[in-house]
Amino acid sequence: MFKRTLLIALMLPSCWKDYSPDNLIRLKDKFKSQVNAFENKKETANRNVNKGLESLNVLKSPLEDIKMKTKNLPRYMVIGRK
Image (cartoon, rainbow, N blue to C red):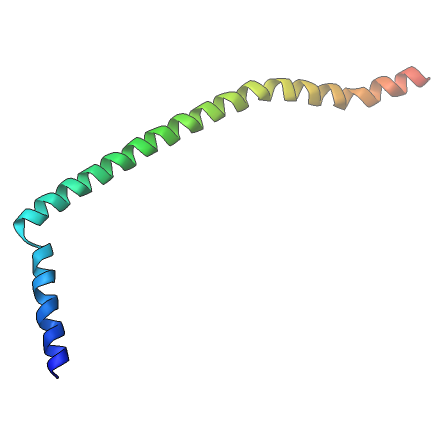
């Protein structure tokens, strides 16, 4: 019984300390910094995705050209054998 009372007596002040007005300001600032860090990471990810899409679009037209050439290649081979 004494151990439970002691444990509760030690936990209550530590819980109350986290919600004091000074700590709420600190926690609010910490939250804002986390949001800013997340926004920065999101912008960086968006830039990287856009760069990747641009490079894929650059590769798209040559790949389509090669696809058309390989599609027409058997026709040329059959015509050449006759």
